[in-house]
Image 1 (cartoon, rainbow, N blue to C red):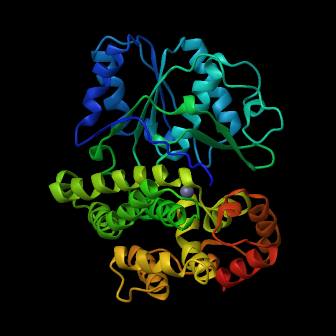
Image 2 (image 1 turned 90 degrees about the horizontal axis):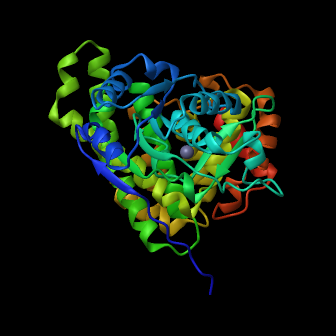
Image 3 (image 1 turned 60 degrees about the vertical axis):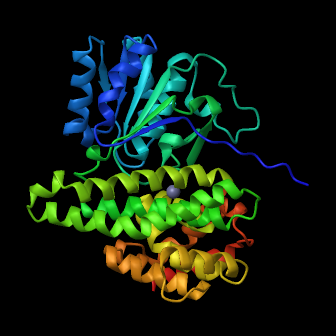
Amino acid sequence: MTISNYNFPTVIKYGAGAISLLPGILQDEGVKRPLIVTDRGLAKLPPTEKTRKLLEDAGLAVAVFSEIWGNPLVSQATAGGKVAREHKADAIIALGGGAALDVAKCVAVLLHHDGDLLEYEAFLKNPKPIDKDIPYIVAIPTTAGTGSEVGRSAVVSDDASHQKKIIFSGRLLAKRVLLDPELTVGLPPEVTAATGLDALTHCVESYLHASVHPMCDGIALEGVRIIAKHLPRAVEFAKKIKAGDASVLTNAEHIEARGMMLNAAMMGAVAFQKDLGVTHSCAHALSTVCDLHHGLANGIMIPYAMRFNSDVSNDKLAILAEVAGAKEKSAKGFIDWLVAFNTSLGIPKSLKEVGVKPEHIDPLIEAANADFCHQFNPKPVRPEDFRALFEEAIR
Ligand SMILES: [Zn+2]
């Protein structure tokens, strides 16, 4: 019998206002010089200012590194590592979406580990060990998607090749996670929808994975149930804000929808310790080749990918249909639900609508085939299968 690995994450504080716990958490640990790692966009917005002020008011010598944008790059992590060393940081406050959280983990590595970040890359034949001090990490997500706040790995792209590289160590798990829905109420509808669909894809792909992991399966199914209920609500509230209705920012139902999406995103990431599948290989390729947003790429591809999987995952897809509240409790019912769900969230049906062109298909197949996620798909994915998937999705 194969021995399964069950890994459950760290101490998580959930609730509106959870960010206010941060100074006390750091003081209890004897932290004096925290570095906030966030992205360029967020650096100018209230969550960063609020966090900085909380720490300054508590007498901590806080600095901010915010040179992170787009799909995260090795050079961004290297620049952050330099700032962390100059500041003599003793804690990393990872604040932001998946990119900021992933770069923050790399910054935590580079603070006390010499050399180039890619020398520590997990898939090298002989990676350098991550065996020196790792500062105290607090992760505070401001999007509900990747769930990187409870992950042990960081994904960053090589600047030249744009290939995704993985830095992995159990020691990169944040010591504390603060899930504060008030930090996510300002997300625009498009970002809310795309990041939420990333979380949905994590739940679905990890549930389909063949390994024995009843705890993760339960979490994945509940994650799908939460997303089916709360993602449309969160997007509707975001649309109202976009239309100028600022009163919605503090609406209790809005905070609830955002909070449940933060939970679901975190649950998706807990579940995908089982691994992912073909949708993620397609999405990684679409980010590498066409610079497409990861969540948007997953959202567009998941109905096609589940149709591809439906012959071997028939029973599990039928259970997902039931959990999601699909009209028909079958694999087809779940796929139809995915299509309708995407439409309701304003996600395009075709890759053509997001600028993917027929000449991208060959490089997409190459990148998807080189990605590791599809090795964990419930059925093997050959290059000709990727061709069929991309050709169907681009129509
Ligand atoms: Zn993902």
